[in-house]
Length: 397
Image 1 (spheres, rainbow, N blue to C red):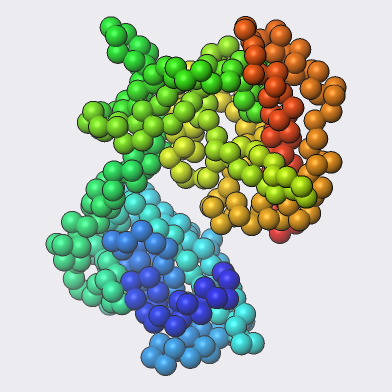
Image 2 (spheres, rainbow, N blue to C red):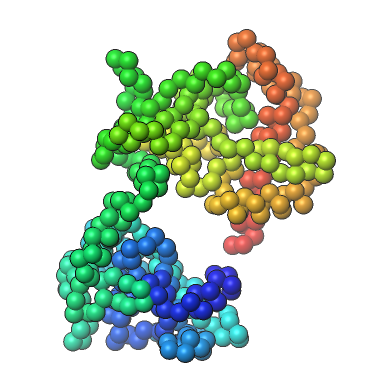
């Protein structure tokens, strides 16, 4: 955790995301750890929560922890304890334990990651001395307070928790993005009786994706198709619909002689010394990214047969960013550290090879020859950025 974020959490006081502890939970008070985690797991918002250990509760003074405290736990210890509690749906909350040095003191931070698997409760009573969390009892953090140990969360909180589970507390685009990630519950149905080929969400058929022809006369290959065996692509349009209303549309294409579908990546730009250079990218967990994952991972999709054989090779030149902020930082770093004009310039041999592939794969080629050099350089820039990000990740480990 960055120091600035830590101070933000401390300055805002205890709330429905943050709780302070002066010391670690002792062995005879592990039930308090379970109570706090269950309360934070069952929050109605969609943010991660934090238990910060080493802060005086009332004064918010940073006192730090004793690093030799035998009660200190690692994430594995907390997770193992939760795994032994018979939680509903056998769902184990995702927990991380980290440390941060502040003002020459060490604080530990238990991060409870957000989940939509709410509400979570115990299937069996959990006793610790004279205290008990009852089976079926739902604890939920509301503002800065936990649900009392002898009660369950009120009805209006329970309603919000169930709405959170079924994504009914999100707008339609966010709901769509959630169901796209449920790959195993989609079915691909080929075109028949005048209906287009489509993907249908089995758990709610109001969610479906029509695949229709795109007649815009676009180029017959793209930078990404340089990674395929055959260059030619056939453009389609994926219309993401809910109850006949179009929520979103994305350009996709058949690749490699219509063996698999691929979402058209976005185009990014990196500034060089004299000009800007383009490349292809996705933002992780975006609709475009999750739609592409669905095309590859849905069990009934044609792509699924080539998932392990082709996907990594096809995506070799496509950059996957965790956020737009990471994209901004990486583009700035690459611009500063590389001579792009030299590093990604297409050679005459590379251009000739692509032109020969165009001759073989594409009928009535025209603009495709003009784009050969540019698309080679887009492909090479994507690979360069991916290599740079991988090296940076390795250096941090």
